[in-house]
Length: 154
Image (cartoon, rainbow, N blue to C red; front, side):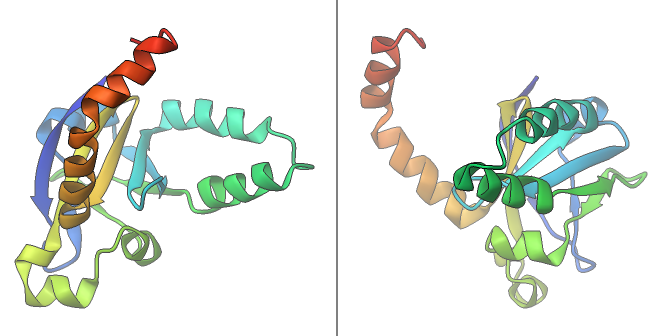
């Protein structure tokens, strides 16, 4: 299970070190794809197999299913973790998450990404977007808890 929040910086070669707490559970390869709310989703290979199976079972006759599958499956990339525990996220996924590589090479403050453990997946956020999103959700925490409680979720 993935939990916790960790901030890491892209290096000059655009590599990103994975949090040491997550490395053992991740294995030697991971899947990264478009996430929701402009973050990236990272899955272990075994968890990805389950997600891909569920997505693959959705009706391709439904436009929403087709669109979601195209983004999640079509944007998925298998990434190898190097011996130092680093990954190289493809440009198109970094751009989706709002990480501008030219800014990264000029200013390390723009190179910070946040890893957030969310049970069976890890989300990767551009730091400023994460802080903004988290601030918004924290302000709504009581209301969200009440809504979830009313449907028996918590």
